[in-house]
Image (cartoon, rainbow, N blue to C red; front, side, top):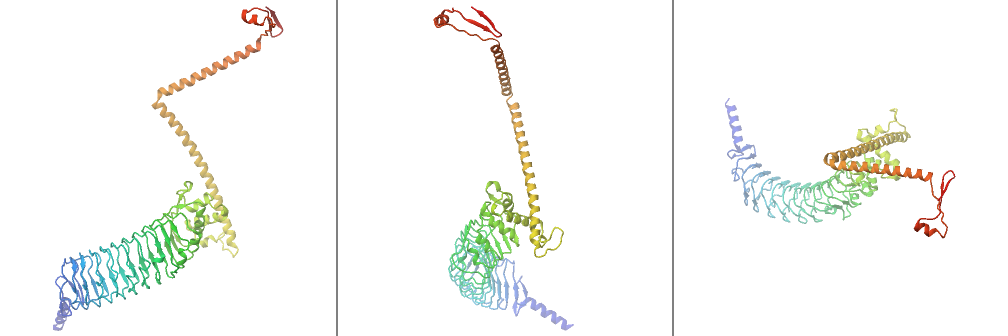
Length: 506
């Protein structure tokens, strides 16, 4: 029983101390680790010289003074995030040579001196995200040869100094997203030979130039979405053998140089949605041979003959593609799916059969049919080597007939609706006129009635004149002497003849 009490006492003492050091009041100590989170501390606790890990999260620290942690020579990680730190003096981390992880995120740091991390040669992970850092000193990361992860997200950085990461030969992850970068120098990322993931999203970059990332031998993922880029170019002859994922979505890209993707032969995933592309060059489509996933929706596609190459490529693409590739121009195709427009408006007349086939295949994929199902004949039997050609022809013919019938019905219904709509508009106009202008309607009606009466009277007069002209006619033949007297004094001789040999003399 005495031994049991002794063991309990030792355990309780260990929980209250760190190898002889007394655990600070209100902190939680676990062996050589001290957790002093959320205690509203304004100073670093004392008596922690043997601690290997110290967490001071969610406190009220406002500054880091020179050699403030010099007594904590055994530390391997230090968390100072979610405080109110505004300034960090030089040599604040002096003698912390064993520290591998340092977290200064979610503070109010505006700038960092060049020598801030000079005494941390073994640092692996550095988190400076969610601060107010506006500029990076040229030698801020000098000597950090073991640094693998650097987080600079959500700051106000406007430019990256040339060769600022020259010494970071082991860096694999770099996050500069959500800053104010407007341009990049060609050597901004020089030295990052092991970098695999680079984040530059949500900045203000106006151009994407793959020449900004030379000699990134291990780069696998590049994120440049939601910038202001209008063009994608590559002014350097360099091949990115391991680059598999690129995100250019949410920009204003209008033009892509045809040879850009030749430098990315193993690209697997590409995001180009929410841009201003109107077409894709055939050379670009040829360089997308290794793609397994692509997003292209939200662009301003021009559904003319320029879209034929893209439509053909999409019909043969067996990977994952987003929906909603809609035409933006011309007006007759606006809002239509690209493949629907190509088929319905016969935009690619030189290859009608190929267009029909690609339309049918794409519609089958949309319904959930697999490529293997398309090679089954109508009776459900597997094809031989020559079978797929017959089956493909059969499938295309059926789909073509169905679509022609559908289009014919669509035209008939549209025409009928147009006639009904026109008739209803005319009736509505008459009704409005009758309701709003009754006097005008009466005048118009009286005018029409008067015109009809006049026309009827005119017709009656013409008929009577025609009858009288048939019954009588006068043949007056004065001689040359009496001609003038007859006209002036109304005398002379004339002969009146009546039809049916009736004659009289005057």
